[in-house]
Length: 435
Image 1: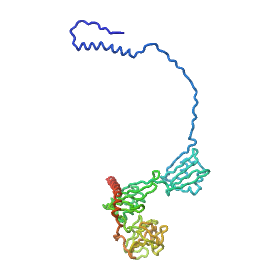
Image 2: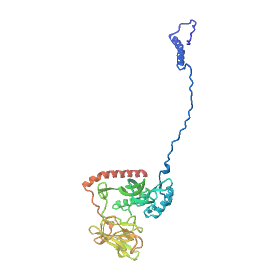
Image 3: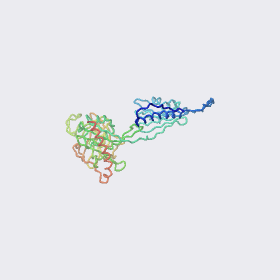
Image 4: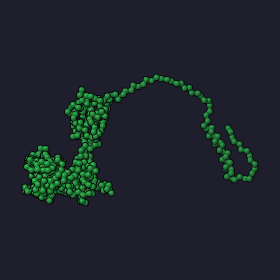
């Protein structure tokens, strides 16, 4: 083993203790390095490793493909202008027997009533033979066409719709309908909004720029698409700075009404306007008759509206007349509680099944706007009578229905607080949007 040798140095001045320490370290360092090097070295003869290649033939496992027999499901969203023929092609159906059945069989006719935005599905074989076709028709009936033996059968059942809640708010700049269209509030919900507050707001003459509304309402969806709207659950309308709120409450299933947060009924004994989406063309006053060409007392109110506009019963009552009534043309008369009665004239037609002696509820359909009898254009002639005498209904202070009693109000209050919180949130969002 190699050992480093240290040659004697010439005598010199005595070294300090620090100098001696440094020399000791210098002597020891090579020794340590030497031992570390020997620690990793290998000794002895090296034996060669023999490698012999082995080749073996293996048979590949049989691969089974299921694609050839697996049915395919495809779906398409119906586009505006789509035809059933175009959809069948996009769904990958290549089946003359199926298309012939759809074209000829009466039970498959709802397939031709296509509505944009809805989904149609088809299950086919890889070759395009139709196994199933599913579609929800316009009347919300789910139609299933499926292969059975050598032909096809069609089954129909009510579609399973998901109930959800929607929220909308808006501000009036020009008209109520322009405001509701701007926020995409469905027409049916707009109609309900008017019906709820028409006892407190004159929607024909008293709306102002800056008035605002908020609505919480039901929707029914299928595959994420809104199929129909339901009832308004809560609504708010600010008219000329006066805030009105309406909350839906059912005292028992199927028997409900709208109330203020304090439990006061919003339903008046009579509607202010029996015609949807109309304007007053002639009031209760003296006027120059357009046909008779003379001044006469007009003892009713004329509401101008397009032919076919719905006419509603102003209050609960019994139909005492339904037919042709001289200058009134097609007319309906309803006797209400006490000495009150109403008349609806110049109608283009009656509500289906309407007849004398029938009981009717406020808001029920009684007929449609027309121009029968002595009329120059489509409108409703509406008369309000007390003991048989015509009076001006716009000048009457008609009472509201009863408020909730103490027991019902205790049940109503928790629901009202929750709905009221949603209306407050909508109001804050709309104010923030305007700012």
